[in-house]
Length: 103
Image 1: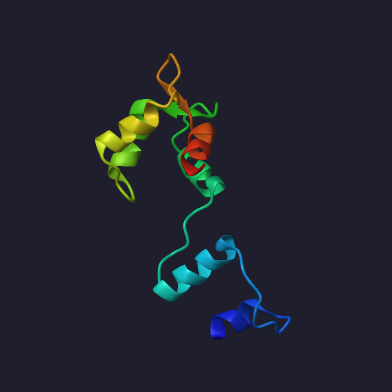
Image 2: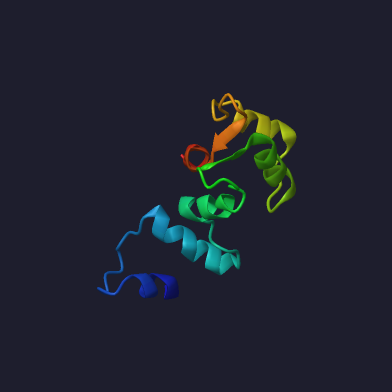
């Protein structure tokens, strides 16, 4: 009831909320941070873009994904990188990569 009252300023007890509205509420109740947006992840990967051209080396992306934050297994990273994200020079467009992963 308290959460519903916070989200419903019209006083409508039957108002429905979207999943996008519900998830931050659930996470606040569970005490977990809300997941980052695509833009948050893109900005995080931009740190590794040494040339400022929108790409990072696939090996460096693999290292980030297997060693920082919520660590992925090598098999999970292989599955992500094998979806055509690596160009002929071994670089990954990280904006396209993030959007693909979050789709």
